[in-house]
Length: 481
Ligand SMILES: Nc1nc2c(ncn2[C@@H]2O[C@H](COP(=O)(O)OP(=O)(O)O)[C@@H](O)[C@H]2O)c(=O)[nH]1
Ligand SMILES: [Mg+2]
Image (cartoon, rainbow, N blue to C red; front, side, top):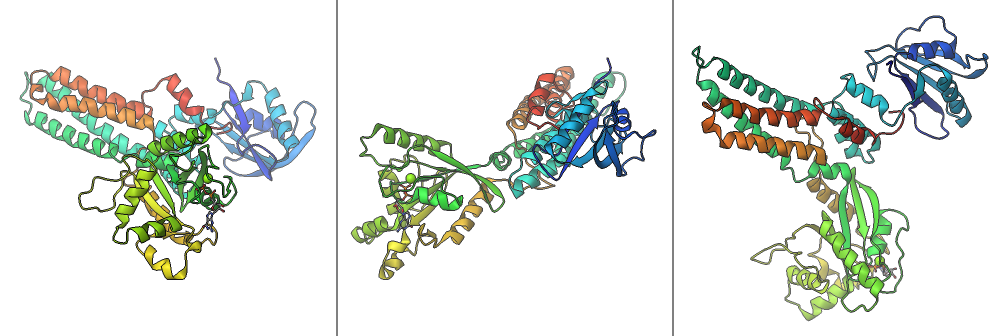
């Protein structure tokens, strides 16, 4: 059965200056000629200004640029034609309607162009995933990571690993076939073990990146915690430059966990405002809010611990010899944040999770008392906006630690799917290495272990795949890509 030729708007939905309509498949050339009335196909990859018409009655629909990309040198590997037309809704609708009347043409499904590109070997699975990420990248560093991935930097790493496995397998197979008849060097076995041990090390290192690639892809989860009325909601409103959370002088205003996506220095941050922690509430709704805040704390990567400057001053006057550690300890105990501080022996302030301590409402402190706050790095006022430049740079530093630095030489994996296949691959390599003494007499079995680990890398890059998996990956794409 002949595969349909597909078409879609590739430039996004809605009214715009120019819309790009893309057609891919065996009948793309026919579509181009029908729409333009051209007797022959234009020169490849050269823009041509033409009137576009309804072939049924010659009605001119619009005037626009026409481009012809004969396969295999096209995005999908198939013949592609593109129409750049005026981006009015009716213009685009008329082009789509007419294309739909041509034989064997139909509207593309989400991701179908890219899926065809994948089938035609134009990109592998990790590159296709990179492309999907590039389309949804919201910050500069997400863009960078996704772009490098579409350019094949991640898949190059996996391809290199596959080569090592393929070479090792070839060595073992040669050994199986020839070691009795010919004198094949027994060193082949040692070399293979050595190669596999190194490979396993590299994959383990790639895996143990502390989810930094995944965080950059999905956003770092940060949660604002603190007592009621210290200015948590005021803080989130300032950071996201709009009034997302209700701010009042009444204790216990915030109940739901409120999440907003932010771009901080190019890093994606998903910041959550929470209900203030206090133990004496009798309000069931507020108590539910506090429980939710605790849950948000459990799953967060980064904590913004907010306190009121006056409360600290009060504590300090009562405990003049108390250290910052003592204060934070008493504060988190009051908030009932168990397991918050690190296990330190000499009262150094360390945290279980990355944490920024923020002292708010510094505007309410008298000049003579300001010196008391010298040991805090982040002293702010949500009222006067004092201290926000420092706070933003503290945040950026924390995000740098939590996310991977997009790099050509050490690209990070960034999806559960990658992690799963790589973990399984390591498992088979482990089992190969732990049984390596049997290599000489049970070479078949040992080769099978390598074959299985290779299969995992094949799944990763898509050399081996299933329709179901492709459905999952390509449905993430938009129509027209
Ligand atoms: N003077 C002063 N008041 C603040 C500051 N930040 C917040 N507030 C006030 O403190 C009250 C509680 O603020 P809110 O953001 O709702 O605190 P939350 O309960 O921690 O979310 C409100 O009346 C705010 O206007 C600040 O930096 N200085
Ligand atoms: Mg609040």
